[in-house]
Length: 398
Image (cartoon, rainbow, N blue to C red; front, side, top):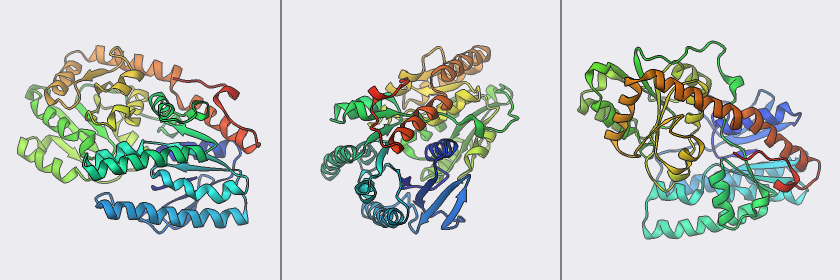
């Protein structure tokens, strides 16, 4: 596996490696350098090689692109060296960037099957990061062409949910070569003892990347609108470029004494332990081009933990859960979010009933056990030298 990111911090990559190791595969991961981690180590049976490239979240356009190019060049060299020593049966490339798939060209020439795992559409990510300028629009068209080329080079295209599968098919990718593997929660990673959700104290949680397009500003504004009688606390677990701005805004709104911002990266298992027992979890994604396709992993995590969820009213989120299972609010609207949180507070028994219904749907359709089996079946077919298509495998589309 090759991922322009840190390992094992990316939960999707970590879930897939554990599933592959559990099925008997020898797994090597090529990832980015991470402070405090060695260049080489073995984690739960996975051989990890970290290249000397570090992520810079606040980088400008040229530095951002240069980081992608540098990592791709080093990863291509690393896979070439690996292939000459021990030919892999399958090479899996995680996007972004899409052109990272060039690292798989030599292994493919030596017979390896290539899996291209699309976490996000790169053109939408660029629009989110750099806006809708003329230069950005030109770059978006280029990225869409690179995406099609990367998908053609792959034997199988894996992606995170049905709306992405449909969008990729509409963009010309052979629908019969697309496999959906949801970003479900691997429940084996949960602590054994977790508190149930409770209303007292009224604890509102968000966990994950703290960046503007995920709507944390809306959460803060909504929190300030809640009545004082609620005695609510807001906890934001994670780090990102919006942390300083949020801290300043909390001071301006006069709620900083009831807002906890960790401002640091926290290991995934620790995050789950920290949010367990919360009153309500928030998925506040803004109504952007990228977020129209967002199916937040944190929503699955709230559901598994039994935490009532308040969720932005966006198409993909609505596709996977109903108003009988989560509370939707108008995306980007602080007053609507405040009303949704007050609804949860006013009838917490009803909120818990919705959470129970959401967990039932998750267990029946979205759980990682079934997703992992689907993923492993694909790897086994490719490793055996057989072609994989949706018509040649039993699939369980959500």
